[in-house]
Every structure is written in C-alpha cells, then in structure tokens.
Length: 227
Image (tube, rainbow, N blue to C red):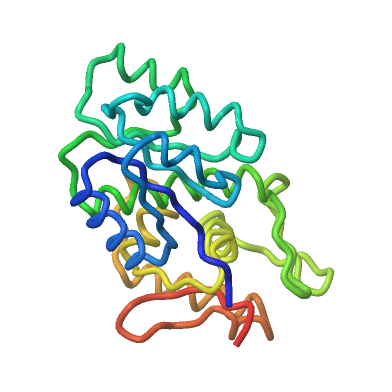
C-alpha cells in the first residue's frame, strides 16, 4: 500500500485538533496532533511531510516552533502552514520570514484547509520530485516530456499536468473538483466533461499503461502503481 503523507497539527485548542485530524484523515492523510510546541519538539520531526502550526500558543509560539523546525536537520525543508487569527501585514511577513509556506486565517472551512494542504504538498512534491518513473513510463517536469518504453509521447500542456499530478500522488483517488483546482488555471472555465475527455485521451496515449489510470465510481480518478 502506498505510504500516506503524514501531517503534524500543533494547536492548543483540543477540539480544533480533533476536527482537523478527522478531516485530514478523511482526505487521505495520516495526521497526528499535539497541544503545544513543547510536545511537538519531543516528536521525531523527520517523519512528517507537512506541519500545521497555530501561532498563538503559550511558551513556544508558532513562530518560535517554526524556527526550531527549520533548525532541525530532519525537518528543515518540510513545508509549514500557519493557522492563525493574526492578519496584519507585519505578522504575515514575520511568518514567511521564519519559513511559512502558507497561511490559513481563523476561522476557516475544512474545504479551504484541504485545498491549501493539497496545494502546498503538491508544490513541495513537484519541486523535490521533478522526474517520476513507473516501470516504462518516465515523466520529467523540468524538461517537460513523457516517454513510454523509451518513446516520447505527445501530450498537451493539460494532459501533461494531469498525468504528472496523478503520478505524483499515485494510488489516491481525486474528485473532479480536486483535479480542476489542482491542474487547471483558476481563470479558465472548465466543465466536468473536460476532465473525462482528457482522461480518455491520456489512457489512449499511454498504451498498455492506460489501465493504470483508474476510475473510482461516483468519485473521480487516480493513477495506480499496484493492484
């Protein structure tokens, strides 16, 4: 089974921690929660793919915790999202100065959380895995080419981005809404049928690997690397 991306939530509101954990796990992630910066620093930070940090905590606040995370060799490149009620320009700049990758302003919806988490992890994944290989498929996001069994296949920009996203998140199913927000530009109007058309084209172009793009009935699509 594909290893789930692991997220650590640090917030002194226990109810919010519980809600975030439930929603993150429902979205397909593995989530741990702690109620203070002190507890967070007692954990093995190297096992996490993302940190969601409250800013206003006693003793070790979110900014100081982010600094400690960035000084830890096992987590210094792991993305950080701040969860905060602070919204002044000074606070935002301070957060980015200590290593924030994004901000979520309280109160926020679980849909916003899910979109921001996915976006940050996607950016991080893309910057750290520019080339993905699966059996005879190679997709390179730097030189922007895809080969199957050594032969380059012609993909449109959208087809390429769609395949790269699915392969970057192998063995996970994504709704059409999630694919729209992750692959298509925000200012482009796209209907659900457009996704189906691009999926069908990709399947044909991938030849025998077309079956690896699976359909989850009533939900969406994904790319499988195992049965």
